Amino acid sequence: MKIMVTGANGQLGQELVKQLVNSKHELFTFTKTELDITNNEQVNSICHDIQPHIIINAAAYTNVDGAETNEELAFQVNAVGQRNLAVAAEKVGAKICYISTDYVFNGQATSPYGEYMTVDPLGVYGQSKYTGEFLTQTLNTKYFIVRTAWVYGEYGPNFVKTMLKLAEEKTELGVVHDQIGSPTYAVDLAEFLIELVQTEKYGIYHCTNSGTCSWYEFAQEIFKLANKGVVVNPLTSDQFPRPAKRPAYSVLGDLSLQMNGFTTRRHWKDALYDYINKNNNLL
Image (cartoon, rainbow, N blue to C red; front, side, top):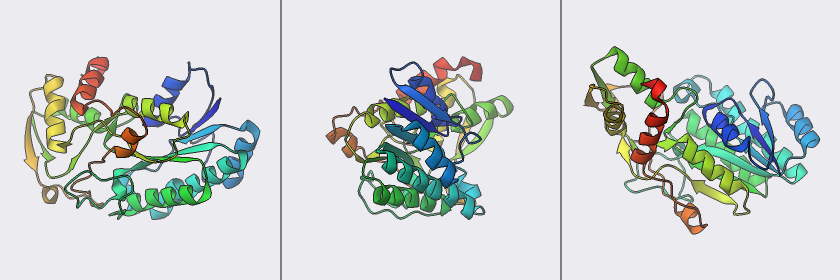
């Protein structure tokens, strides 16, 4: 089976490539410089030449705050780029997998968001990702949309790495406690994506590690597992203003995942323990 991965040098893209490279599949990987997904002609040409069976689009504009002032770029990558891939996939009969986000919801819920609940993005980033979802659903007949949240892993910058870096510089810091979600280890997310795309169980899925926490609780657990004596003080979102508004509650329910026979991802604390123990160089 021919699997094509875009955004192959990103945090999730590198993890997907790592897990797929020694598989039975024929793998075609593209970084941003090798394939500009916003270039429709280039996308169509490459897909025509390869004739992939599966396209996993791990390319994205993920700078949530930057999107507020770079709206056109965010929509170009997250919406137009995904449209180009969805159309090209349909032409060659390929399945398409689009990685989306908890930011498509407004964060006002008090229980986990279902896969087919009404979306209401707070900012440009969420709006651009939802537009990518909508275009995927309307332009391709064999699609997987997978929403995830709070992703960290071996590659690229992420919250865990930031906290561990700060632990080298500070003995005390503040982290917001009024934003609740579920951390997601890129290894666990990639494993699910690879399993999913080999099926014909199309539709929308939510995939995060199980369990919930605030960013404050997440930071506390990071320092505990890494044996860092950092005092963490809880802050409100108002005390830590950002250009883009964050959802206060963005826990994603995984009913679709369960109903289709997939295994719920392990608890976020177990995943974090594995990550920190496998990446001692970060400590």
